[in-house]
Length: 426
Image 1 (tube, helix red, strand yellow):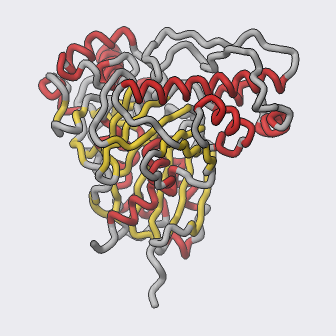
Image 2 (tube, helix red, strand yellow):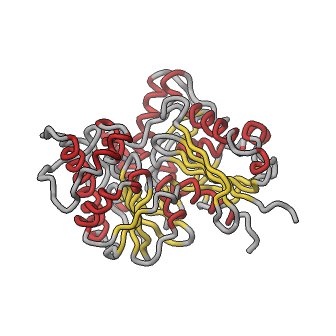
Image 3 (tube, rainbow, N blue to C red):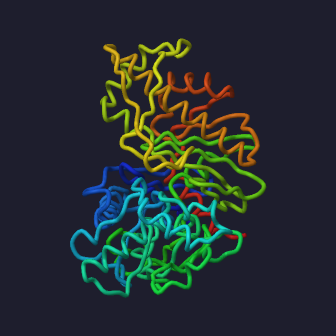
C-alpha cells in the first residue's frame, strides 16, 4: 500500500512562521515553528524562514506532500517587480498590517466610492491606503514601473508557483476586492497603476504545481500542488471547525474575532471572507498578546497568572495597545494606549492588562452584533493566549458565555486541511 498523502500548511503569523503536516483524517504528522530569520517587513525573511522550517521536517514525510497552502497577516503589503523581486533599499520592505496611512485615507475612500464606504479598503487601516503610500514613495524615489502590489501570503505563493499574478480573495479585501461583485470596488481597476493589482482567485483554488526552484529549496515533490490559502485568522477558524453559535477568538500577537454569518456584513475595520462556502465575518484589533510580552517573559506570564483571582476585578481600566491606532472594534488611527496607572504588584498589573484585552473582545462581539451578526453562544479560543486558564475565566466573566480553550488548533493545520481537501477526490 502506498504511503498516505499529506497536506502542508504554512502560517505566516505576526511573530513567526509555523508549518504543519496532516493526513486525510486530520492527524498531525509533524509540525515546526520559528521566528522570522529577519525583520517582519522583509519578504526575504518570509522565504528564508519557510525554507528553514521545511528542512526540519523529516524527508520521508516531505516526499508524501501532495498539496501546500499558506496564510499571511491580513494587510501586510509589498510593492515588487513583476517577477516578484522586491525594490531596492527601503522600498523593498513591506508595510505591515498595523501601520495606518491616514494621509492616504481620503484618496482610498474616493477610489472605493460611496457604494463601498463601509468596505475595509475605504479606511486608513486598509491596504488600499498602504498601496497609495507605497506607490507615492516609489515615484518620489524615482523608481519606475511596472510594479506588483502583493500581500504577504500572495507574494510567497507567487514564489511557490514561480508566477506572481495571483492573489487570494480574502487577502485582498483590504485592497478593495468586492467579494459579492467579484470585482474591484469603485474606480480602483481604472487607475493608471491597476496593472499592479493581482488576478484574484478563491480560497481553496488549485493553481498548479510548485515551481522548480521552490520544490528544490523546500525538498518537496515537483508534483505538489499549490492551493490558494487565506488570511491567518481565517486559517485558524478552519482548524477549529466551529459549530453553529460559536465565535472564534484568536489570542495571538493581535486579538482577532471571527464568526460565520448567513449574509455578508460590512463596516470600518470589518473583514468578511468566504471560507468553505460560507461567509465569515470578523475584525482584528491592534491589541493582543504582543503587549503582554512587552512587560513580561513567557515564564513570568505563567507564574503571575497563577496569582490572579479571576473572580475579583483588578479595578484598573487599561487599553493594551502597543502604539497609537486601532482597527477594530473601533477604526481610529489616533486612538491612544492606556497602560497606566501601573500598580506595585506585577500580578495585579497583568490582571489589568488581561481585563483590558477582554474588554476589547467584549466590545468586538458587541460591534459585530450591532452590524447584524447573531449573538454568540460560545467562544472557542485559539492561539498562544488560549493556554492561560485564568485569562479564560476573566473573559468568560466579561463575555457572559462559555469560553473553551483549544490552543492545539493552529492556523498552519487549517491551511494543511484546506490544501489536502482541494486535492482530494470528490
